[in-house]
Image 1: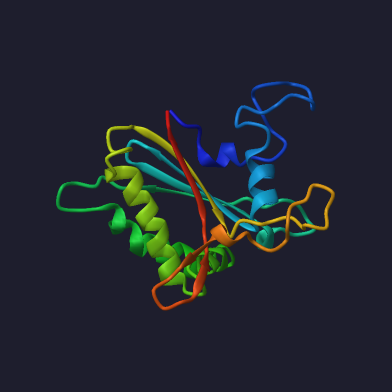
Image 2: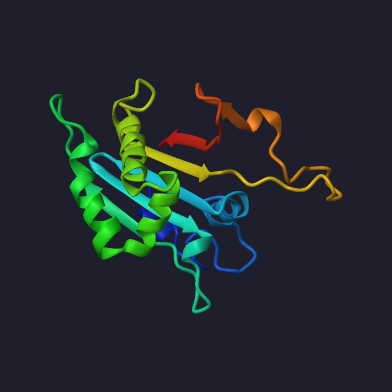
Length: 186
């Protein structure tokens, strides 16, 4: 079973080691890696019929402290139904209950919260029915929205401008930033 998303995103806590120098069970900084690589990262999990999403976003941070919100949903998709039944609950959460988090979803939807919710639902759907993940009971996914790039002027030789292969050419000729997407089952 994958840990509860709230525990995964808990700050300054790890059950792996007792000292400050130990590496957490989620790797050398799932949260730090997400925050370093993208201004808006999404962590999604599926444990059987429980779906969760957590946000690591620069825009949600305040001087008072780190804020990494997470939300759980229950869906029992059948042959005639999909996880898209979660849409009304997601709309309520991201527009009424937690509109500040909804702003992250809006960014993920390229300025449209409905598109952002649809994209999240598509990820949950893929975690449920894709040929690679449907047979798995536990799936963990990280989405790094608009991956950051370093500067060519830095000592490491990495550029601030995205390399040519980091954009997708759309049919209408616009270039759209790629999202980095990774899934793993347990």
